[in-house]
Image (cartoon, rainbow, N blue to C red; front, side, top):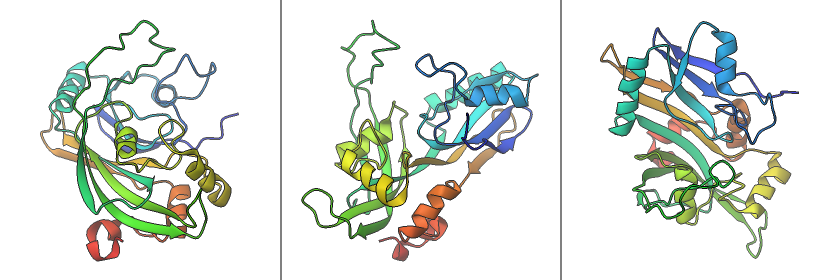
Length: 257
């Protein structure tokens, strides 16, 4: 039985459809998921059966947030794909990571291609690392009186992230590279901290949220900016951690740490 919340439509016109994807929802059907597992493209086809949707980018199943599609128009899809290639689409994320991060920084660390050994059993393992650049700034720190390992307290940071490139799991891998893995990341994270959030906050998801997309409309030549806050579950958690107002943290450096 599907208990995931419904996607929200954030923006739509004749050629664009921008949604808020819930955490846990696949973007496309996957052969590694059980048959009839709900997915975002399937939901769109149910809501708009006369339309054909062109995927522009992806979000991991565990990631929530803003995702864009082109509806029906192949030329618009090609134009938008070129914007992604030219790095003219600007994406913003929020994440919670282990430890206290620096106020701001950039991560310029090439990433090897993450091969899916199930889906791509014969793909080459010898491809060189690809350029990968991520910019970040810290919006908040918190120290919890909960021992983890040999430490008497647990420290976490709320981080705003702007990836310049779009490699697979880039934010998750780059923050791990800084020794600040994302909370809830079962592949690149740290189990003790994931367990802390499950046991003390009843949180069973990855704390990575796509909060904004900005790009040029493929026909109207205007800037499109679509944003969405994290869902109610995440915002309730942020309030408990001392981060009740994300916009104030973004706009006022004195409130951040």
